[in-house]
Image 1 (cartoon, rainbow, N blue to C red):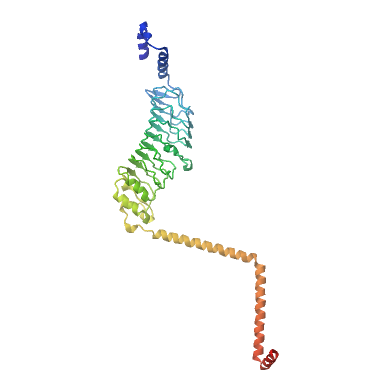
Image 2: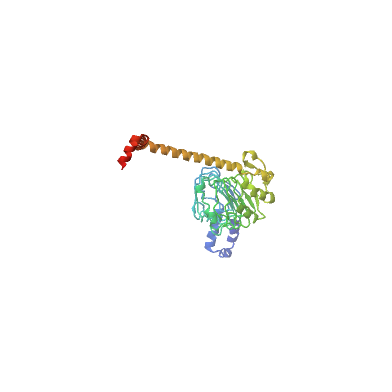
Length: 376
């Protein structure tokens, strides 16, 4: 409205209106009309915030006010984001919330029309493909929430994090996913990453080079499947003395192999919830705090006995299988074996009769002389 008031004042003076180029005048009028266009259907507009939540939308409204800074589209049915998903002239949009949308695909250049985007929330979706060129090279994104987005680890493609164009990203939430493993050096393309959440993501180990991000200050690894901390992981933790880690809720296996991990935990100040770390097994150490474990309690003999017992069972099964095969072979060749036994019996009988005949000859003197004469 201020623009129109100014325009009317200037129109009172014919000389002043000549100072305006026709193109500039049209551009300004269109800009004013764009800023003043109404709120989209099914949405609520408050100041620079537009709320279109739980409205069963399958596309992003195209009639958004151009001065929109915060856009909430949670709880709809927007399954795909592409370069055509967003209307033009959203240069001021800084916060975009798309949680719970059944989102599956994020295409290349999907966020090219949002140059001022700082915070992107995509939690509680089912992302199958996230193109590594989804963000423009000069993007300003600082916070990315991908919690509950990758429920099938075979489909969890995080390669877009390696693209190198998320230079200003400082907060990344990958909690509540089914990741199991993180690819090596997956966060090296995030030079500004400070806070990383991997809580409840089924992670069983931290691979070499995963934490190769210099400014990392907070890392949440609670409620995963960690049984111990490998030496290389502890070395990476030590290389970042300012890093604070949370590890509670993991099923620590308290045998002789965890001794180095316990020693590191007792001497490190990086684990903020170290007092809450407890053994999950063996049974006699369950719920015992890791800091209270003594060296004499960390035994592997029980495990070795279990291994030996398993080996004996396996050996017994193999021998039983060999016995069954042997009996089967005997059964299938029973006729030939029977003939072979009869032949051996007859040969033995003939041999024994020969010995018996010689014995009778040798025991009778008359037959002995006869035998000698016959030999001569």
